[in-house]
Each structure stands twice: as structure tokens, then as C-alpha cells.
Length: 620
Image (cartoon, rainbow, N blue to C red; front, side, top):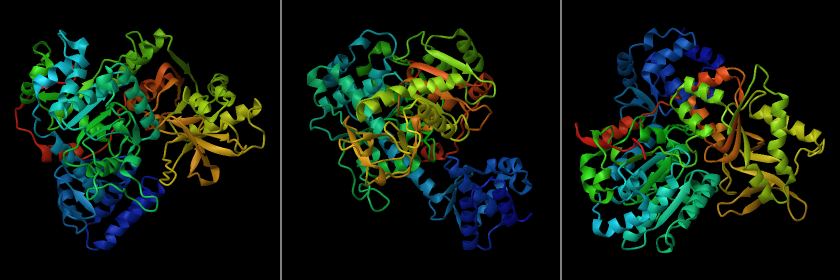
């Protein structure tokens, strides 16, 4: 079968999308003398971006073809395939201006994604290099005042260590699960940096979504309440979305701030960094002044961004982080001699910038939610089964046997959303919506978002909360599906339909300042009803109670990252509806995102072989 017929076959079997085939055919027209293998390699490189990857390892191509039932003999030798692809005028090496880039690790990129990952790697590597001079005599009293509980401690206080690290490095990456004190640490970090900076620094707090920005503002405000007024007052607490920070154009793509018109900032705090995709992070870093410090907060164990890349996971790596012995010598006076970590080999050029926080103060030692999240994250199905058998009070599993919708589920839906319909204002309705949430692993099917949304409306029509013929109604929860920069609404924003003072039905959305604003239904970008949302859409949010629905049959999306993310959205109670066997199978499955970022960082940043480091994440 020739390559053109192969594309038709793969398209008909839904192994490729129409856009993948069109991209490959375009490249073939540009280079009419290309090797036959280019057509399939280009199509699957495009396909990879649709799956969330930023590149296609050539070694994966034979597996993809074999799964589709295609002869893969011509693709098994990655070295030979590399030689053939590089002969094409549309394939280049790093640094070339070609539609496809093939790097030294045999990763095939669309040029724009290789460019974006390179921008990120260079910007972060520059900030990771070097150690800033610190006046330790001035800093030590402040450090001890901000972290009094660590004085005299034998074990390392990694929250204190992170704050001290921010004095010495222009890049700090903090990863930790819910309740590990990331925002607590950042508030004290800000107090320290502001107090020790001769001129008042220009600081921005940002997050990927409006909801995440609102949570960041609330968390910073609570953390400030525990600080002495002299240190707390200068700390900013107003957070904004990345799109608002960068300044979106209402009439064209791109941002107002970029390399030629940078943001006027000395320090950027970026929360929920695991939600940020590669193109947006590249745009952000390109818009920052070279001297601007960057502090990234996130949870490396959560789901990766919806769009391309596993950015935060790539930056953090999978194992324990390490700090170089050289850095530790500079920090010794501010950490205390009894809290000095032991040395280990340094893993990455960004390792000196990484802190892993492990101890959760939200989930106490006997918390079922916390214990289950750790077991899932460890990929331990036996431990997960034991936790479920113990039936802790904050956990419930409703095992199903082939039924996607049951009386128990219908009762849970009614309990979840009756407070929404009973609310007296749109603000209180949005607050009610934020207390309990139904999350789905899938969008389609009877147990997916679409099926649950239909079921919820049926339930509330029967209860008389929705008029039989009403298409739009008071209390309808909605989810924005497309960015509208003019309206300041973005994919994933949650709203509620509610009448205004004149009785006109409007869509109401929470603002970053805690207020709500109405938007005419006629002006809304694409949206859907949202009694249930996917786990992906729930990232950056937390709820008192969460009900996670699994499908009745296995699906590739089911992974320990999805389960962990769903579980950790719950603060007080977590329920799961689905087959127990499927849950345990998902615990064993890791999410794989192909990326070239770590390799680019290694080539740009480098690190002296044998450099010693100290373990920065064994505990906190």
C-alpha cells in the first residue's frame, strides 16, 4: 500500500484526523521528491499534538502503525528513518527554519512547538544560572521571624528553605499537593523579598483561569492574616489571569505584551502552573524582562494541561529533586546547621531551583482522602483496595455493575444541586455550585458529562425546578468552551444563568475581586450546560464534596493522574461511582506525554558532571 493510500486507510479508521492528513499532504506538495516515509511521519507528528504531545519520538511510530494494522517494516530502524527524513527540504535540525524539526533525540516536532519549548528552556535556564548575593545579617532575623516554628528543628523545614532559595535564585519551582503550604510559603517568601529589596519591587500574581486567580487571592489574603502587619501590608493580594496579565487583543491573535513590549515586573508568582500549556508559557516568558524573578507553583502529579505539553511535570522531573553543594554553602547561614540536607548527585540544571513539599496540613494523618490520594499517586492498587475496604468516613465508593445511571446516582445529583436552585442571588448560586461538584472521566456516554447533564435536567424538571418547555432557566450552570478576549471569558470558566433586576435572564460569572458580573446570553461564546464537568476542567478548583464518575468500560484516558486530580479536588468528602476493578486498573496506568523540553533544557543549561546536590524533597 503506497503512503497516500495508507493515509486514507488511517483516516477511515480514525487513527488520524483530517487535519493530520492535510498537513502531511501540504508538506508533500512542498517537497515533491521527499521519501515515502515523510508522509506518515508528518501526519503522526501532527496527530501527536492533538493527543497533547509536543513531539513524536520516531521510536513510537512503528508501535502506532502496528496498532493500526499497518506494515511498519520501513519505520522500525529509527536511525535509518532519521537519515531519510533529514534529506527532505521540509525537515530540519534544531536552529533551522523548516516546518518540521528533528532533534538529536530523534523527536520530530512541528516547528512552532520546538520554538516554544526552546523559548521556555532558554528563559528558565538563564534564571536558573548563577547564585544571587544575599545580605545574610539582614536576612536572618526576618527568616526566623517568618518561620519561627523551624527554629531549633532537626529536620529540614522545606517551606523556610524555599523562601531562602528565592533570595538566591531568580527561578523557584515549588511542587506540592493540596494543603502542603505552597501559598503559605509564597506569602512569607514575598514578605522576605519585599523587606530586603531597597526599592519596592513590581510584583504580579497570576493563574491560568479566573477561578484559580480568585483562589490564589483568597489564599494569599489568609496567609497575610497570620503575619505581623509590618510584613503583611506590602504583600499584594490581587491576582489576575495570564490572559489579562499579557493583555489580549480583542480583534486579532497574540498579546499586547511580548519581547518588544515586555511587562514591567520584577517578580512574577504563577499558581497552578501544571495547567499551563507550552505555547502560553512561551508567550509569558517572552514577555518578561530578563531580570524578572519567576516563582512557579503547582502539583507535578496532577493531570497535564489540556493542550500540548506536560510542562510543569517536565520541569519538576519524576524523582526527588537535588540542590548543589555550592548552592547549599551559600544558603547555610540562613538554613541552620542542624537542617542541612545530605548530598546526592544533581539530576538537572534546574535542580537548584526545585522544592518538593510533601506534608499535607489539609488532610490529617487519618484522612481517607489524603491516604487514598497518596496510594493512587504511588500506583499501588493493593493499598487503594485496602483503603476502600476500611471505609473511612470521608470516602465512599458506590460500585456499579454495568449500570451508568442508578437511583443512588440520581439521588446524589438532586442533593448536589438543590441548594443552587434555592439560592437567592447569582453570587450565592455560584457559591452553592462551588460547594459540591460532579466530575466525569469522559465527556460522552451515559456516565460522561453529556449524559449526566441530560439526566440532571430530567431530574429537576420532574422536581418542578425547571419548567417543562424551558430551554434556558434560572439556576442553569454553564461552562464556557471558547475564549472571548473582548468579554474576558475563557475556556473552562463557570457561570450561572440568573435573572437581573429587570427580570432578564443573564449569565453571571465570578470576578477575580470576588464580585459577579452579568453577560447577555446573546453575547456568550460557545458554552454548554455544566451540572457535571470533566476532571480536566476541574483543575484549579476545589470543592467541599466531590463525586467522581468512572465509565463502565475501560478507556485510555483513565490513569492515576486523572484519579489523583479528581480525588484532590475534594476538601471534606470524596465519593466514587463506578466499577471497582476499573478503578484499580486505572491506578496502574501512567499518563504519557512526549516532550522535548527536558532534553532542550539539558542541552542549553547543562551541568558539570559529578556535581553534588542535596536532597530537596525527602520531606517537609
